[in-house]
Image (tube, rainbow, N blue to C red):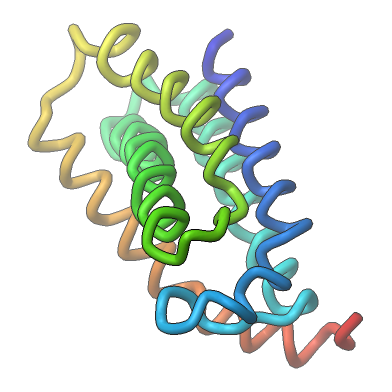
Length: 158
């Protein structure tokens, strides 16, 4: 199942970010807030669990629920675009490799494009795909600051 391959690529992407992004953020300037390991890793675990949850729901009930289907496809589209902006864009602008760029460009992007535009293209209503993308992206983006705050609060910095 290619959906599980995407989930694996998403996991590799998050591991790459988890290993190097907190240190990189110290040099990112206005392109990324400085984050410590504890806060970033907490948020990363929660976002990764979200990816697993939405994939599980899609694989078990995606044919029965358009909300689940378009949340999943919106999540995939968000991760595809995430490989370009901010990862590739930050690498180019800062002239320093942004963690997550390689796994985003060479794993998430091609597998995600295949899923959306080849495997499921016959059954996609594109306005619903864009709606799912917007909703999932807003949900993730607006959850980051609270997740960072929770991570700072409940986990000692390491």
